[in-house]
Length: 179
Image (cartoon, rainbow, N blue to C red; front, side, top):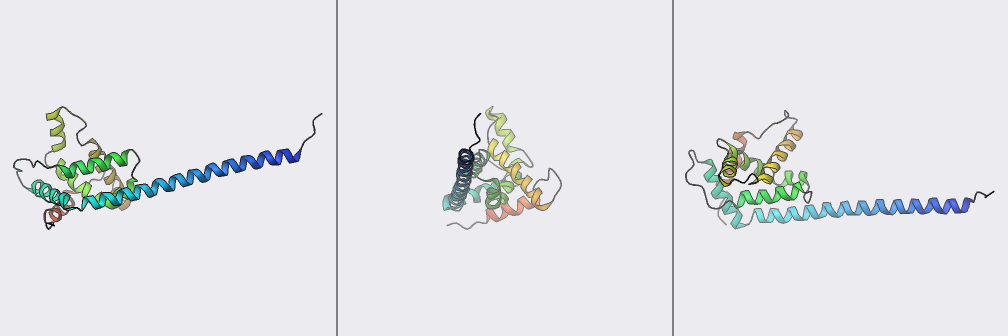
């Protein structure tokens, strides 16, 4: 009959505790690295958002979106493409949604509201181009930002950014001084 060897069992259990502890620590380190990378990327995106070229694009697009009976569309849609990029990065998990909300949420929802009201320009572009994915990530991102707004304010489910709030954002964008 085999005897119960406490030393062997203690070594076996100790090894498993060490393996599980090491894996847990490695997972924690990976999560911290991902968070730092997300924050670093977001800071780079903020710098790009405030560079002269994108400021000019923001001023032009916001001025056009605020016009009653909008005239010919602007050629430069860099602002929408910028938010499309952020949406793609957030949707895949490369950027933390709450950090995006904190850094860009007001602008994202402000532009989105005016790109979809009174006429849904995004839907029009999708129809014209037969491409259902035009600004899909921007749309997803704006929806997520409004959900985070709703949670933060305790507003009703499905709450959207009001046209008045969006107008305030775009009016300040239209008044951006040239660099």
